[in-house]
Image 1 (cartoon, rainbow, N blue to C red):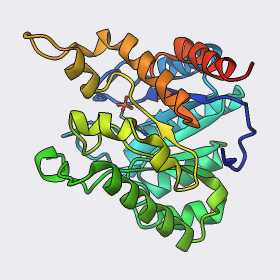
Image 2 (image 1 turned 180 degrees about the vertical axis):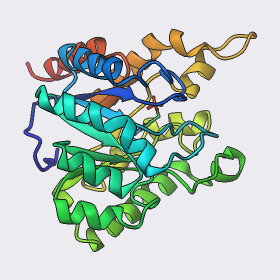
Image 3 (image 1 turned 90 degrees about the vertical axis):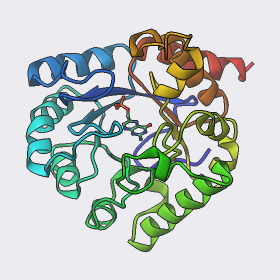
Image 4 (image 1 turned 90 degrees about the horizontal axis):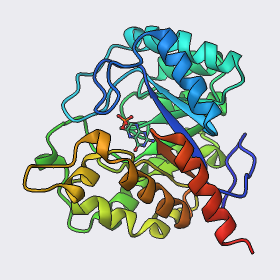
Length: 278
Ligand code: PMM
């Protein structure tokens, strides 16, 4: 697997713990809006085995309102500073270059942009200038309307092509290829079976030559899989499916899995590594 600048090879898939400092994220919205609660949870994630903690101040769930950069920064800044000060490796989940720049100045190690550098034209130049590691995720446009954006003839080929275009744009802006992690963006402009098709073909995306981050934790397609006549399985009851999918992503060669429940995932990635090692 290719190395990622600033991240030593651990001989296993990494675990990224999710910390949403938002009022409206789909699974943990509102719980960690208070900075003290957010910092305490970030420290818990790290103690549970998160290799990095992903701090986000803007919900990306379908239909969520965009948040102004200053509001987003006000939410995350005390949290990023406190976690970095405690030795936690922090990534910042933002589509705003100014928020990314402030978090990097505060010691964040990575920028996680769900727009893959599309949303803010200053993002790729910032990444190039800072040399920071980054996740470029696949998504399409700003529209929350999946009926418009989740149309594919061949979802695997098109996600691969569109990720390749984001990687090319990053390199053209001067981003170090060794700094880039790619992410298929599970649940972003992909519905139902499209997510399973992408997950079943991760090696085709890895053939772009960069490590992959995969985020399935508690997402709607798992709720749909496990649903009954009463509707989808509720978010809080998707933990086993989240763990199974993170385990399989690690087994398929993912560089990192992004999860809410860190301890079981941290155990699982170690089992995957040991399984292949003897
Ligand atoms: N998913 C969410 C937010 N940020 N970032 C990356 N790189 N990959 C993802 O799959 C991803 C993300 C939405 O989930 P959340 O509300 O649980 O954070």
